[in-house]
Amino acid sequence: MFGHVKELIVILVIAGAVFGFAKPVALRFTAERDFVRRRNVWFALTVTAFLSPTFWPFAFIAMPLLLWAGRKDNNPAALYLLLLQVIPYISIQIPVIGINKLFGLDNYRLLSFFVLIPLAWRIRHAKNPARILGLQTMDVFLLMYGVVQVALFIPPDLPNHVILHDSPTNLLRRAVLFFVDIYFLYFAVSRSCANRESIVDAEAAFCVSSIIMAVLAVFETLRHWLLYAALAPDWSGNDFSVPFTYLARGNMLRAEASAGHPLALGFLLAIALGLWISIQSRARTRRSRVLVVVALIFGLLATYSRGPWLGAIFIFIAFSALGSSRFSRLLKAGSVIILLAGVISMSPLRAQLIKALPLPGGPVDTDFTYRQRLLDQSLQLIEARPLFGDQSALSKMQNLRQGQGIIDVVNSYIDIALFHGLVGLALFLGFILTALNRAYRAAKAMIHTDAELALLGFGLVACILGALLMMADISFILGIEKMFYVLAALAAAYAHCARESSRRPLVHSHSDRPTEIR
Image (tube, rainbow, N blue to C red):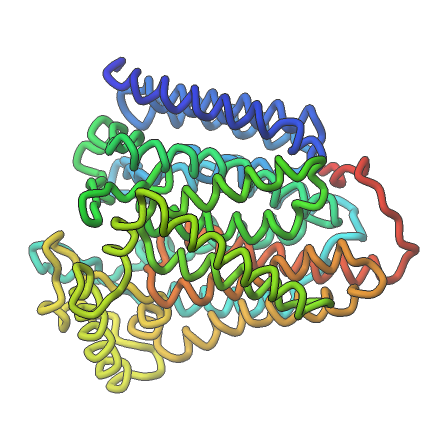
């Protein structure tokens, strides 16, 4: 029970330092009572996780704590984002008499059941004309995509090659979990962030969480020590579904922190960087603004993940290219990138980063060979069954099984097209592209009347574009999936907020707080 105290002490010391640094900055975005409560819940859940011999003591403490914190918080969406990666994804099956299993329970679903769903219920019964009302085009796209996901059964890739068959119970389970995992997340965030301040508060909370992960990631790489991997053996039993492994590039450890995988961590940090540059003007000092950027960049470097690196650069350039003064912004962005490249080239990290680059014939060239083979075979299968995909595609791709025993479909778009067809891919892209279009048009309309609100929108647009780019080289799992739907929800909320803002006189006040939902 107390075998992981060393890891816990390291995490608490680093997190305590980050929260101490972040508090005066965060109070520019967040009410002090909310910040203190969220911080205390983060510490309580972290300590409970490391002292719990199994998942269930943690869950039984987390349930009432999350329910209480979500009820007290003025902006539960921000609470959700701060706690999104408080611990890694570890799925434990809920035992039920009479059937094989109910479904897996993990931190994401605890947050959904005890923060998001109660929030959605309160929103549904609260009279708030400022929020999005009724079903929108994005809701329709998402619900239709959910219908495709529920209707098409994808047998799990079991190591013994047994093909499981569908059942009415499985169908019902998929429908329930679609709402729990996806729709309630989108609905609760898009409807609860009903004004500028609540959107900024949510983004700032995610940035605080990401800074903690970034500093932990740097520590993990420097010490070659995955701090959260200790939880897996204790909680797993026979239910653990994501093995924690020490992934290396060259002789350097690829950090994971609490994200569960270097690619997931890199994705989240790249998005946090994009959100921060769109809200950082509210920070009091240049020093605090720069330190946040530096922490996120070094955390990104510690993941040794090329896709998130390119995604972060793309987000930075895209944000600089949007809005007014595009030429000067692009010039500054180029200067920052060149300066950063120069600093890295003179640092001890230079040799290790070169090894991580995709140079032909280099150490990572085999990754590209695998991706090319994956693409070729996937396109053949998609061409054979284009509309609704081939749910047994994995059984036809056995030559792509890796040393870890899995067929790694490291492209989110190929994954969707393979198993849900071009119909599923069209609905998926229709959902996010509608969010992108609405946020961009709203931000563009605000350039000359409310520059701060316009920057907030351009930041979301840049992050969505960066996410779409990164998803071509990563799987749609872990925090990647959750943050994708959060970005779409924030974009929908932003477009609605900007439209409402254009209808009333402009008021600038950093003392405004998110609309309370009771």
